[in-house]
Length: 403
Image 1 (tube, rainbow, N blue to C red):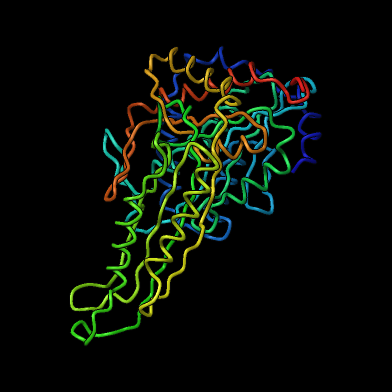
Image 2 (cartoon, rainbow, N blue to C red):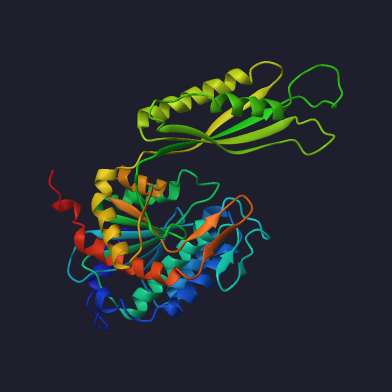
């Protein structure tokens, strides 16, 4: 993908004159907001996961080309990128990206119900609304012909149950990281949240298997459900550190198929969070050892696997970008709230790139329902325009950074 950078710069200056975003801040954005809603609904109902999220990525690439954007490229990992070059020969890029995919897709659950106030459907806020907002941002950029002080790189990266370690994004950053001076992670929910608290995570999965047996069979062997309960009880009672900066959360637990049946199999998903990388590693090792001890013997088979590991984010590195986000929220009269640094932003930090997550609306995710609020979308989209311009003006290229 890097080869097209020279081509995009070569065509800069051709065609109509470009304008700065600040000249466009007060324009009517209602048509674009409506497009965010409709595109989010369309994305949310496309089957997922597929290989490299090809169904959803094909939809996005087609939409981008329909906008008239010629610099649209798909790489071998399934990432789809659109480039908007700056005037001149600036060597660095501002990356604005969103995730595409849904690990828990179901045709019924992901079907979107729309009212005047909300759009409801599994995945609508966590993934689809953010990707839709970035698509519409690309449409806006092409339609208005605005320009920035640095090259703009819009990225849609596949992320689902088969890519929990964000391999596609990591591959992209491995190739482009040296040219990216700042990154913005766009997602649906989270408007008004400024993420300054660094938290690293481990995602673990536990599988427990017992021999099949009748409910009233002789013996007192514990079922898979009972073993999972003992694991949850034991892990919940561990004191990790005096400052309580490390916790273990039971994200999901299930066993058995219903009344009248012996629970011979069960599974549990754990999330370990810590503000310190060393404590995070210690907690992971302790949790794994505890699980293996509880489940040992009694014809129990237990498997513990690491599904993903995300490093602690770098608050100091992100400070210029989070300051720009706070200024933007203040301009829009939105009171900021403190949040935990997103895993994708922490990944940017691993590559030496400062970043921040930007939510485009508010909403809620519960076990039974997920929705986004429609009224804040226009403010959220305007925020995206403003923060992109601020980051393009304020962040410096890596070549200019002091060593």
